[in-house]
Amino acid sequence: MLTRFLRTSGLCLCMALAAGLAANPALADGEYGKVEAIEIHRGADDQPVNAGTVLGGLAGGVIGHQIGSGRGNTAATVVGAVGGAVVGNEIHKKQVEGTRCRITVRLDSGATLILEDNRDANLRVGDRVRVENNRVYRV
Image (cartoon, rainbow, N blue to C red; front, side, top):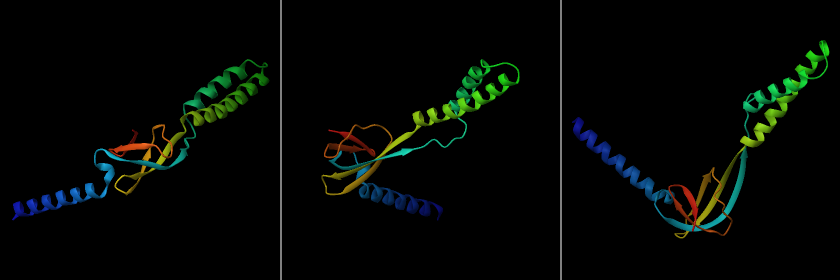
């Protein structure tokens, strides 16, 4: 009884996988088409404390410590550290900002495929491309 259930379940799973592969042309190897649209989305780094914040705070504190003496020196160190942390955080955000591309491809079969890619594929609208393993490559 259990053996029959396992065989039937395995058969159903294989059929579902085969249907999924047929329904998604991006999973097939070597589909060709033309780029119809490219949308670029930028993602932001929302972490309040990152490497830029720490390094900027340290650098600002060291620079601020060079100014004045006594209480003025302490105030300059604190202000320098806070200012450096803010500047360092902003610099880090600009460098780490991720770029995602949503690429729309019209396949030779007539189907339209929309893919997301994090790498710079250096594509333009109208380029002839090959889609393989959900990646777009210029032909």
